[in-house]
Image (cartoon, rainbow, N blue to C red; front, side, top):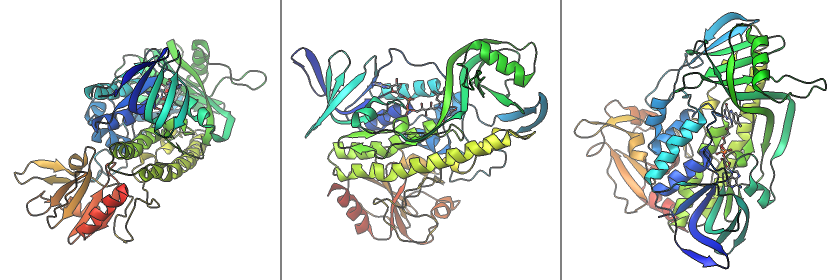
Length: 508
Ligand SMILES: Cc1cc2nc3c(=O)[nH]c(=O)nc-3n(C[C@H](O)[C@H](O)[C@H](O)COP(=O)(O)OP(=O)(O)OC[C@H]3O[C@@H](n4cnc5c(N)ncnc54)[C@H](O)[C@@H]3O)c2cc1C
């Protein structure tokens, strides 16, 4: 499925595909899964010779879980991950209190995932790769993009060693040091704060309570240890760095991690037995000015980097990819015109700018909180960091002037309903897949378009016996809601012709 042609040209091999994804982190894997399930020929290349075994991001937030649910893997992530971990805070080595940052949330039927799940990034990526393999696509390890040129019909990618890949589109999901970004001439502009540097790593420790996320603070700084699910003794380690005489961060090591632990945790006898992924994390607040360069796109860390406070690094990348996937899929299959691809930047660039603001705000709040006895990282968790409120009201794809509960561009909510036989059916099950969905509240409609599935809520269709669907969508009478493949609302209307008009306009 993934390769269209193979031939020899001079001494190098040229392989054709529709979409070439550079980088197999969470962003690239989300995009690859979404394209592959649409039957789009896709290749995903990764320069490293082996998959990483480092924990890095702490897990998907509520909106990313919805994306991963649409891709059919949220249940596996929920099963492998862990939710509801309590933050245990200490001041000067003394226990000051325990806080569950999600304790106050009220679970509602429109939100199936009401909290984040902790899961090591390597494990999440492994689950995504398995999903991708189910579509017959594997990550090509040890394949590094070194250059590309664009021409009328596509992009020629140059691979280290001399091979070339011809693709209709190329997407740089190649992380903060993105080669693709550099080759476009673009850069991450913004600020870097050396003062707020952190050291992070994966460490092994025995003898600490693994039921809680330990956070020790004092006047001089702090150290945090969060147990990594599905491991016997591994932890996410984060701390302010040791600094040398010139005030520069000391490069992290097993020994420096132990010294930081001893200084802040004050628990003699606890030994860090192993430390991997030793990393100094500088606080960047940076993004690109453009996401699209002809047939080349940037997504994830390649396009934006920001504080980890709020945990939105990986999540923003997953959601970038989900926004781009259906657009690339429809354009590549001739179901939409090239113009649709412009809406990727139109929608996601402002989200990145907002994410820079949110995470900078959460970092300030965290730094303030941990200077006070009893304070901790719970302040980084807010409504914003769920990403459930991300909406594209300003987008040219959002067609509605109404003043209802929901507007075009908003996330389409879930709702538990039943089928005629009484079996439970969630709206998210109806949305799952590469299609648009028309929710027809009240009356049946016939929309003759292969891009759309219609779901009647009312007679002959789903039974909204709890009234959850009508409540979530704010609909009392008859109405049609067109839901995009990425589960945002495209259009709310009572006229079927507006639905077909909307879809026809995508192809114009
Ligand atoms: C130590 C550390 C701790 C972190 N902690 C957190 C956290 O707690 N919370 C949080 O939200 N985020 C955290 N992050 C950030 C998070 O890991 C990133 O936001 C996330 O990985 C971004 O995903 P991505 O797919 O866009 O890029 P990446 O995961 O960086 O993937 C890019 C991939 O592209 C590959 N690549 C690069 N160049 C090429 C090329 N030329 N050819 C082929 N392949 C190439 C790379 O090898 C890499 O595998 C942390 C990061 C680090 C390093």
